[in-house]
Image (cartoon, rainbow, N blue to C red; front, side):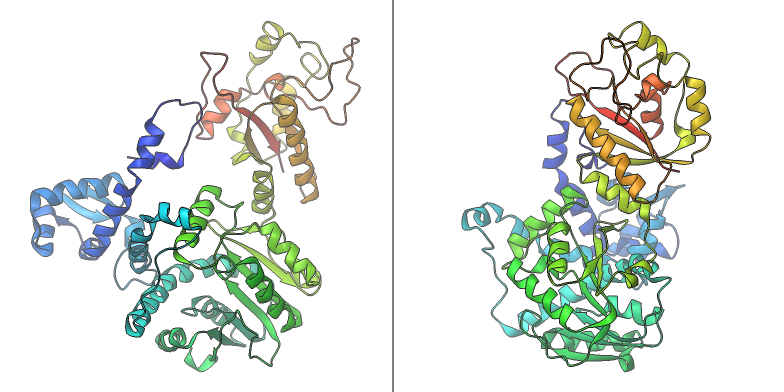
Amino acid sequence: MSLSYFEYNPQELNPQYLEDLATGYWFSEVLFTAVEMEIFTFLEAGGMSAVELGEALDVNVDGLKRFMQALLSLGLVSCTDGNYYNSALSSAYLVVGGENYQGDSILWRKTLTSGWRDLQSCLKNGGRVEYSPDDEQQLVQRVRKYIKAMDCVAKTKVLEMLPLFTNVNIKGQILDVGAGSGAIAAGFLRKFPGTRATLMDLPWTLDYTKELMADVGLADRVTCCQANFLEDWPVEDSFDLIILSNIVHACSETEISHVLAQAAQCLKTDGYVLIHDFFLQHHPAKAALFDLNMMINTYNGKVFSHHWVQEELARLGLHATDFIPLETDTGMIIAANDEQPLVNLRLDKKSILMGGIREQGFKVYPVRTDQIYVADWTNLKCQFGCSSYGAGNCPPHSPSPGQTRAVLADYTQALLLEGEPPTRSFQQNVLEAEKKAFKSGFHKAFVYWAGPCSLCPACNSDKTCHSPKTSRPSMEGAGIDVFATVRQAGLKLRTLEEANEFVKYFALLLLE
């Protein structure tokens, strides 16, 4: 079974998508139960039969077999000769005691489900209706549970952050604001041995942070600073690196403006501010749902546009990178007092470009040029089926299949851009994407779009294109089999039976 509710296809007009959304909790409940029962921990030592596992768990074997079939279908276990084994994913992240164990994070999500059941009440109220316990001991226990859960996530997130600083040698002082477990600071302390870190958080959080820092052998390189980061920061030093990880989404606009101003105030001349968080433009569905989670579970939290954060940084006189999407569901902005420190960062210009193109409304898929299928029959569809044949840059004035093959031989990387009508808007946005690619350093950037050129109200009667600067050949007009290429990339595309069915447009942006 696949998580098809993450793969909405507007060309498939049936209620299956709605059914999958309605049963989405089935998936999470299976995962919660497996983690709570520590099934993956039992399996890690070696394969176990259903009978052996049932005895270890003290559960009904017939019911367990059905449950294990669900785990098998989700790719969390495998089964060979009647014995169950952990998948590589489960072995890496779901075994208790493992270095990157995510079970605490997963089960924290389970504690949030009761709040989500009050979503309708939150909508009526305009905010949260369920609050933290008044009992101090219960509150401390909840905080420790939350910190432990977030520690699981932070340990893996910092591994995505560190490569950006490969060409940077940070020395001196790090400030981790709202440090939680301190896992992000710990990652930087390990990478840069000449650093020390100040961990700023509330007192009952820092009590647990100290324990965690001692557990990883970093207690002698950290100083704890008890403070509410929404107030003035009680620090006198200036810092080489200030970490704001998952702080932005916990605040209102006014609050985060204060936090950014405090960071700018105590940043060294050549230091960095690292902002890591959820942003609306990155994985939009997850970001929107996380924003609701903030409405349900916090006082003022919300997910921001990265543009808003970058504008706030500029207002404070700081220079900032473009949005840096991580492979996972979060992203980063790195700021400095001037541009030079940012130049030293090792940024992936392709992933940043893809993020910028997605903001234009496209779905973006990286492809290799050997996945692009060029055929000799596509011109026939233009010549004997399209009223625009012979116009502007349409066949026979567009590149031939042979010319297209020769062009593709000079490239290895490309992007498929998926959009929708109207044609003129689609083509204008495609040109903007090509422009973005060129400005990002892809000097060979060139795009093939969908359909006859629609930029001008009408083509000239002499069939000569008077706007070659902005006109581009279509994929099909240049010999590219769009259906085969799209399917080769693992995407869904079908011919339409009715004129009013949803139309998908594709463009091909060659990079380098």
